[in-house]
Image (cartoon, rainbow, N blue to C red):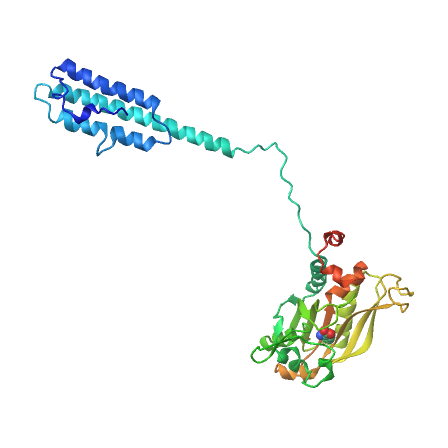
Length: 366
Ligand code: PHE
């Protein structure tokens, strides 16, 4: 806007004493508005521009109302009023159309910015795959889910009670030696990293009445010296079935079904006597060698059999810890190493390969 503001003076001060002069003064203001609108009004100064012309407090129209219209002498008042109304509606409608113009220009600019060309080829995002351990877990769990087991998980930080005592492994039992345990220093009541998933047998039976049919996937920790087949952490799946009528036949049938599902219908199963404090009798479950079919090869060390996992009928002593009636109940349990099973099934000879996250290795198992 130009520096001189005619509306800060009255019409008399401006020397407009006749209707013609009044009309002339209004025409000058209107011409100035029209020129300013074209030259000055833009999206950046829009609200200042509007305030200048039609702002309630000190806009041009307010000043003209105050300084031209109100003090106008009686004989000029009608023509001043008329001209004022004309100017007012001219300015207001011009501002309104300019506002719309600015807004729709902004809308168009935004739309142009956001435009998506659907014919362009998309950005290809590489999709990862599941880790071989995860895949093996899924495969193993699927087999047990299909015969009515359900999945539960438990804590990796355990107490000696759940990891040992309640599993019938008392303080100075030699079975504690061959599971070199990580103890957590300073933990109140003594805590440790579970050496197997078997503590979840106890935790489940404490909470739940029979029938129990669970599998427990999870990480376990042992103070082993790392080599081709040992690490300080590995993965297990625990299994537990307890009911009023479970026999050794159910145990054997379940194990055989599992072996056939996991290794194929030709796989044979063998139970070898073993020892675990929490099962009685205990067994090592072997399968006929998946490489040579049982005739003997390097993989099975020419025995025809491969050791799969430990298992057995639940030792009645364990029921005492969870207040189950050992007279009425029976069941079986097993605990398998997922890493071992994956290595065996996929012919992997180095355990560390599973944890080094080398994509060249991982890509072989899409
Ligand atoms: N917890 C045993 C281990 O880690 C495996 C096992 C589980 C054996 C259940 C028998 C029954 O070696």
